[in-house]
Amino acid sequence: MTTPLLRIGTRGSPLALAQAHETRDRLAAAWPDLAGPGAVEIVVIKTTGDNILDRTLSEAGGKGLFTKELEEALLAGTVDLAVHSMKDVPTWFPPGLQLTALLPREDVRDAWFCRQGCGLGELPAGSVVGTASLRRQAQVLMRRPDLTVVPLRGNVQTRLSKLEAGTVDATLLAMAGLNRLGLTEKATSALEPEEMLPAVAQGAIGIETRAADERTNRYIAALNCADTWTRVTAERGVLAALDGSCRTPIAALARLTPEGIDLQALVIRPDGGEWYATSRKGPAKDALALGADAGEELKAKLPPGFFAEAYAGPVV
Image 1 (cartoon, rainbow, N blue to C red):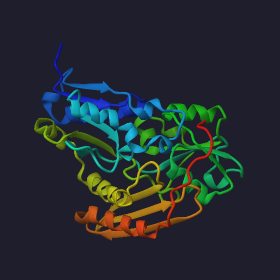
Image 2 (image 1 turned 90 degrees about the vertical axis):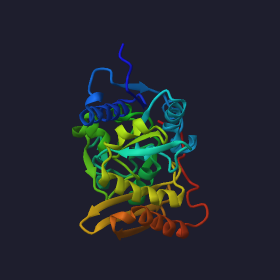
Image 3 (image 1 turned 120 degrees about the vertical axis):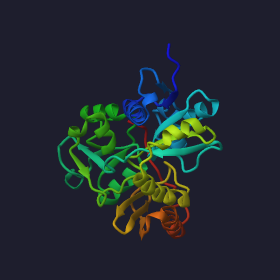
């Protein structure tokens, strides 16, 4: 049996596996010694977030629920790299671990699914929208306070099956995940950022490694997309300033322009009734500083208890 040169740690959902396979394929394309059979092994690790399905992530503890066990495996040396959806990754990494590369970013938009085939603006009053994301909940209610939003958990396929069964009238998912799973045609529409500002780092795949593992880091660094790194750095700068997690409805999107970066950021109360927005433009080299400055501005505006409200009712 061939001893793998690299071991990829990943969650076991279809989307997580698709992202791990994309990483493996990119490694094989970049490094001939990683292209042979068995050279790169994919190791499936079940995370706390995968096990908790009766509560929202905000109630259960936030972003780290999908990364904790993967990071433990990295620190223990049972895997060499962990592949994450970057929107699930906490702002800070455990000592000894680092973000080493970001793959080229996919579509940043949210996908809208509606059983009646209509858009968010046309959905009948009183309709039920299911989502596990406080950011999506808040922006839906900001635009349509006459709708009911309920927590909807599960992987992409599970949530779509609940929609088809009539558990909810509409739901939202990331376009990036649908593209990676070949399910794009199932969406009713894609919501432009002007209608639904994405989560920080939405559509980006991040690769985490041990900081001292020079051999693995040399392999992984070759996969990094500089443009994605710049954009995600700005967005995560906002998140860091606000100390954001799955418990806080924060949205941010950095776009690259001929002049540098155009960054939009939003914080919004979970009930959609109050929000604050800001923007920054500047050179790409200042990505982190621009994001941090935008986040500090928003933080200074927030009244006490701004994020206190969340979901009411059980997960459907």
